[in-house]
Image (cartoon, rainbow, N blue to C red; front, side, top):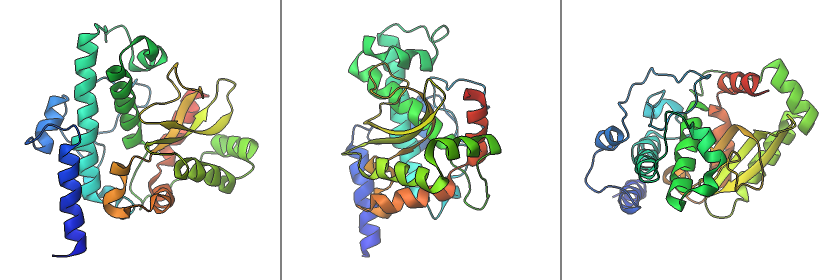
Length: 253
């Protein structure tokens, strides 16, 4: 038995125990969240992130070698699907009219709701955005002139932005996210949030619109990178979809 094979089985066993629904396949979990998998689906940018889990916009192996296929499958069909399922339960229990209240608006007043709502609304929003932020490493993209000018103005250079962002991810104690946000005064800033919080939440110390972010929970990288979180963060830049980030920036600015 190879060490690599043991690590995979051990990871799967751990993932299956961590608050998941035992015995269900990935497709069954996705169905619980109102989702069917399609490799060619893309969420249109102007639409708000829905309360239900949308299809992953690429195949599980599309981000290789930066993110391996098995990690993507577990991450999407187990962890993210469970956030969507638990969010649906919280919304029903706490009588949220999803036809009148967007997910972004709910996050903006999340202090009024339960811990279950906070954790799962944040988890669902963060992951829904995260999937869209990534693309095939074979497709070269770069910041638009407008975004590049903002990066130069607020960070001095792309290298400085990457250094700040990487440090935010590496130094986040425990689980959480590293973000580049657009602050209320329309400046770019690097911040991090714990657990599944984000900067749309009224309980967040840093406030602003997430432009892009990186999941630094261990389930996002441990199968491939083990304890080497910095290696995962460095590799992730290879799959950042600047085309999507550029459109998001143009929409938010």
